[in-house]
Amino acid sequence: MSYYDQYREKLRTPEEAVMAVKDGDWIDYTISQGQPVLLDAALAKRKGQVRDVNCRGYFMFEPLQIVEQDPEHESFTYHSWYTAGIERKYWNQGLISHIPMIYRNQSSYYELGYCKVNVAMMCVSPMDDEGYFNLHFTCATSKPVLDAADIVILEVNEHLPRVSGLAERRAQGIDANRIHISEVDYIVEGEHHPMVEIKSPPPTPEEVAIAENIAPHIHDGAVLQLGVGGMPNILGEHLAKSDIKDLGCHSELITDAFYNLYEQGKLTNDRKELYRGRSVFGICAGSQSLYDWIDENPACCGDMVSHVNDPYVIGQVSNVIAINGCVSADLYGQVCSESVGTRQISGTGGQIDFVTGAYMSKGGKAFLCMNSAYRDKKGELHSNILPKFTAGDIISTPRSQTHYLVTDQGIVNLAGRTTWERAELMISIAHPQFRDHLIAEAEKQGIWKRSNRR
Image: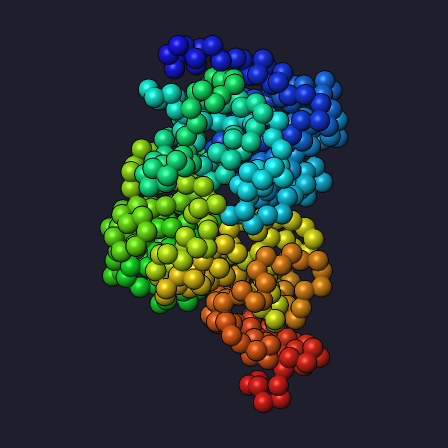
């Protein structure tokens, strides 16, 4: 039987395919552009027909119908690995839960059987002549989910690109970004709108200042890992206009900042010891121009974050510059990057992976960035540097692994510093309005020497 005969034999309507879901099942929706919108809508219509169905996913770009149509959890409950965008809204409404994880370990939760998968549903690129569907921008964690699933249902999205894999990994028998027709139970087709474009808001003056504080630490041949937001983009624009050359990309997330560097001839990957000449990433979010650049481009390779985010792998690349955002920090150097008090607003993601890996990289540096202060809805200013965490904030990076911290007020390196030195350094990058208060609090906590500068 040919691949296309197999394809036709497995073709179902969305309504037919979701009949595979039974009471008590665990479903996986994967990530972002892999969100199975047709299957999700069909499954939501089974509200009241099934009970206690749980679904995992993360970084979703569109409303989830199993949440929208069943807010009382009569049939469905959604759990997010990374609570951002639409999922943050759902969390604030008490409609979903959060799953803590370190990103590089997420695949192992499926491989070791900690996360059972009764049905995997995800969008894929159209099948090629060899019978393979491409996992496009979901290759970060999709293959272990598919391998663990009892039933695999693929939703073919005609707009999705094909992302190249790493030939070295495929030669080892690790195919991170494809699944063959023989491994699939059901296939669903239907009309999809164009890919969702993610546009960062214009950078604030504080973000511009943070980018300018980091820029002097980036030199020819640096290999970048950039997180989301306006600051990484403004840093990319700054580097694109500079004299810097031969930058590289080894990043869990690839964004427009990398595409802009490529367009300006700055991103070559020519000095990387590992995967020379190729930008390596796990997920992608940005403009259609970014998506078009990556489509079937052998110089842009996607792989699982169990590999991309592995500190040992990162450490094999020299001069890794990891730049990630955080929400707040305290005088001890503890960093919160995913909650405001107990309110979940994102997730740990790969921050700790790259903080660890950049430190293992020869010449590497990891920067955690935040505004020194923020204004609440009433216009009152508050410090993002706290005397200590007391409101239930989630510690994403422990003080023992915090190295460079950056605000609009400056940049400090906490590696090897005593608690007294840390307090002084943290206060030096706090908003000036709060420095005297922080000194007083440091004195109360016994981490301020009388000889410290005031």
